[in-house]
Length: 369
Image 1 (spheres, rainbow, N blue to C red):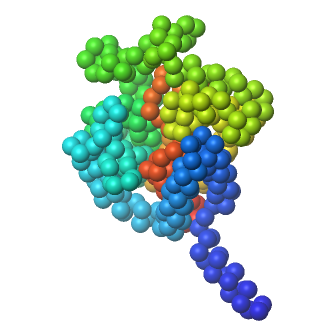
Image 2: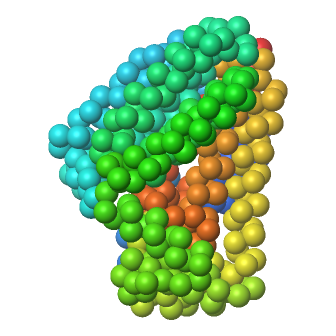
Image 3: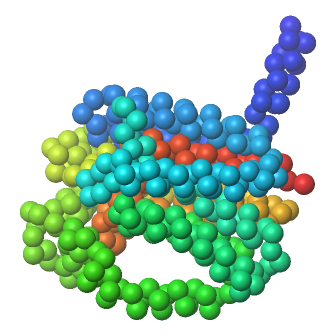
């Protein structure tokens, strides 16, 4: 019996030793919170069950990727990048969505190709920087920018401005961690400021302009269309304020159960969490996010090669950007964009791609030389 237990212990160690358990516990807690809130916000338990299945797929992929050495991941990166670009082109022709072509219907499951670039783009930038002396030279930086610009342009054609900016942030974080000079960021900020008037006149869709105007009106404390464009953010603020310190209780949120909050299982799921679990629930959830981001940055700091260091750090900072943007959106501090709250919002592609990225981060720690 003792030998059997020893053998089982050795087998478990061989199977699971590449997983980073502090990171696994924090991610598991976030997934548990996500299923709990989805069960309450959804009209039936099927929503939480479906999301749990997707979490399971993501966990399996996370485990598989944690067992792949960063050297093999690096060698496969150009192929992975190229393969993930193909659905971005395909979605422009067969995609579906409320305001464009964002998803591909696979029969009962909607696949969002842009979510894959959250992982493959920083991988490609890290691969490119690994082959260069750091900090990157002018030509190396231009090459990395071209790598970033191609998928960003395809995502903007859908059009999906929110996801494009998040994918851009992931690539930008990789460049920042690679030591790109600050004057590049200053030049980028100046270019964006110069392009804003042109984008407003010719590029932004009417619904995007309406979201920006609603945001500016909210900052001024008024809404010209409270039952139209201003409805989302007004109801979200009511839900957040109604939660108080401890919340109304699980399943007792009025704003979501009476269908006042639109997209209450996806983009505005954090407002449901705030109403039902209050400030305490919000703080606990944010601390879990902070721990995950901090753990990714710690693993990046311990990495012995450029590829692992840049990639692990970029994935952690990209997660931070998602939390910041979605949290600011539901609180009225940022314009409403289609950015989900990681591991809380309902959606399979986003959850699976995030967990896959965490598997890559774990591989950087488990296989470091």
